[in-house]
Image (cartoon, rainbow, N blue to C red; front, side, top):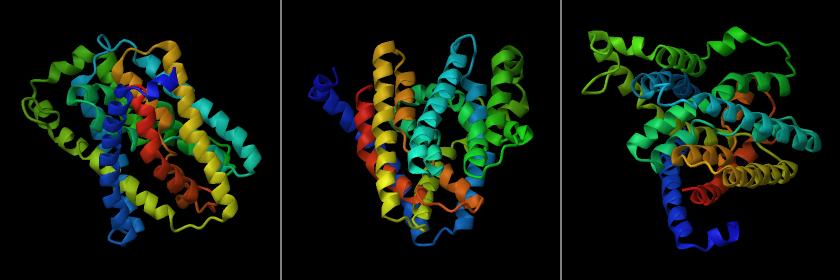
Length: 332
């Protein structure tokens, strides 16, 4: 039972471990927050850093992880992880839509429907897991967020801007999704053929052998850069103002996002007994993660008048300093 778990010494130790990991992520994020707050990094600079991660470092990280770690024969359930990620996003979007109908504000759909699936969860996994476990968990994460990467901008156009057309070319060729699909296809379905080039000079330069390759060196920048961007993006949301109504609705969003959704996730993990430690941790982090900062980025890029997003994001990220270690401790 949950009540007995909370008083056990094991839970206290796990909570402290998770709290330490969360604090590491927020300590790095605080540097990004302060840099943007002091205007050392401008809005354009932050956008440039985000583009660098999305278009360069993250695709490099995805490609190198699949090239060096992924084998469909030893990772037979990868497609189930993709389905789990899709199911979580659909359920969260459905919940967000129901709450948004009461709020009369479409931002609620996005804030509840999309968690910070990558930029928050990836550094948390790195802080909580040993290097070998993290490499495997990162692969599972990239597969898990296939739906997230494909549909956040589509749903934003649909819900916030009222646009109904689908630009499939833009969807499929978005760098993180494209890198995942190409890597999954090449190193998953043609694993032996792909690894037949391991001894080539080009492979040694790009992917490395005894020492890291160029793509890995670039990809390893993703976690620290993404964490700095996360902190900077939170600072950027403070430029917008929300009234009292926004604060009340933000409290409700935080309750749904940081307590109800992870409670459902914890219950399902108990019922279905997920034995894989890395997968169990990944699923709990995805359920407990605060709203995606990309919601604010989308609103800013399309000049959408935000009423809830700044306050809700700031509140959720403040609360998750405690809430995330709590939920993570239950599954460590």
